[in-house]
Image (tube, rainbow, N blue to C red; front, side):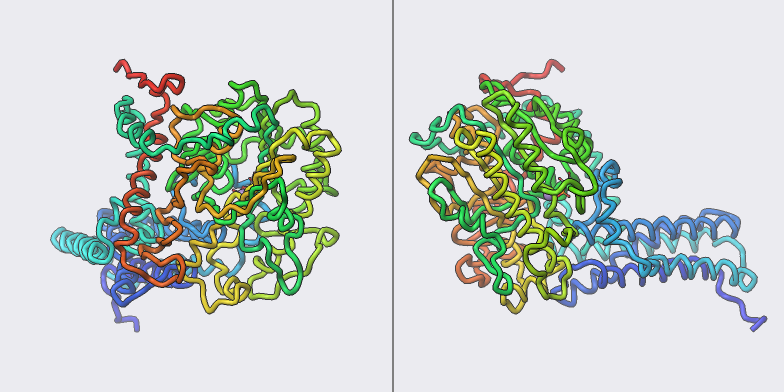
Length: 630
Ligand code: GP9
Ligand code: MN
């Protein structure tokens, strides 16, 4: 044994191979990435390699063995943290980390209950390569030749690394043409170029978007404006201004999806009050309405509601563009004599709300300081919805009228914990504890809404208000597909099913209207702003909005998701496949093509407006461009 000499660069080789194998295992065990064929599998397996060769290979530039080893071990720790951070994030958001998300640290403190459900001891596995390297560094050096690599050998090494990169990109290009230019979908990116290269790419995109603001001069708006004007839906004459002057109460129903509405779970009704409302004479209930949020979750839904623009494909626009110029719903109603405010019993800085609410020109934010929150009336993320609604109604009573209040509920939030006394139905019995608990917290949310209606009546606010309620985003991610399939009585959840599962309920409840209907427009959260402003008789014909009035004759059955998927009354487009909406069968891509183009255009325009901060160049009163002096 003592004569045996390990080859010169064993530590480097171990680093590359160990981290490589670990990364591939992590891909297969911790992320849910569909691999459809052998080529995709091959790409997945080789994609970490080029980066690892480069990254660990930099050690070859150090002369001393000691420094080389330190660099390699330090590097492996860094990469392990990156991978682990991604895994923990993925468990919660079912998505990959982006740079802007990393700066959302002010949210991390509050993730307490959620984090505990997400991290465990088994996670030490993600550091296996680090442990292995520590052992190797301790025991191998005596047994190996310590001299630095020769220059020509080093050159050959980097040529190999570059060749690996081109091989990877080449294969990815045949599998997914235009991957890097078109990608709204991080899963496709990670699958094809690997998690490490993905982060480098993300840094590049981030700097490009910062440059975009600096370089914008307003001329970009001409094309966007033409598109928006050409596609805008005329208000419905009968509905326009029909409820002018009423208070507007908007309720964001945390994580509520349509799949529980009018359904039972093991013989128990999940949402008795919300079910009743779907048939109510004063309620327009939209059963084919979708959330359009991305990584910003609740904050994205707020952004969409206020602006009728999409959030961003990466990170939360609330964080990345909190200081932009906007023309929010709040600002519009304030100009028409409304007192505008948001009510949410959480710290004001969560999701950067305090900052961006200023940019939205909201008159007030009733945050946690406005509420009486204690151990008794809290669970999970904070104040329970029933006392939240009760205290909110009391606060509303003292507001100047008419007011616009947007209330954000919280109890039906992952991980869906409840106190035993608030459990009104049993848990479900699938392999997903999350889905099992979800039905109970949804049941609680339903009860809280029912009581809220009573609170409003008690405070004398009910009759003169419009109450709008919608699900903010999904509650059950694709991580729970197996349990979901069990509940829905399906063999499996296909991408087609997943897209349709993004439906969230929308209620527009107008006391005394007597015109209640179930509406089956295919529609989305971007449509809320124009719809409600028109009900109040507020003109939006010059606004930069991408949604359409739900009561308009010209409203189209077409709704786009943030990641490029979309739904119409005829097709569902998901995972780059066009499905027949009625049958769920794959159909010719031609049937989706026209819409694919429009989805790309609209998402692109929305991004342009936000990244360029273009509304600073737009006079919404006149519809004129404010041309930048420079
Ligand atoms: C936090 C609440 C929840 O204040 O809105 O945010 P979410 O995690 O659903 O985006
Ligand atoms: Mn939410």
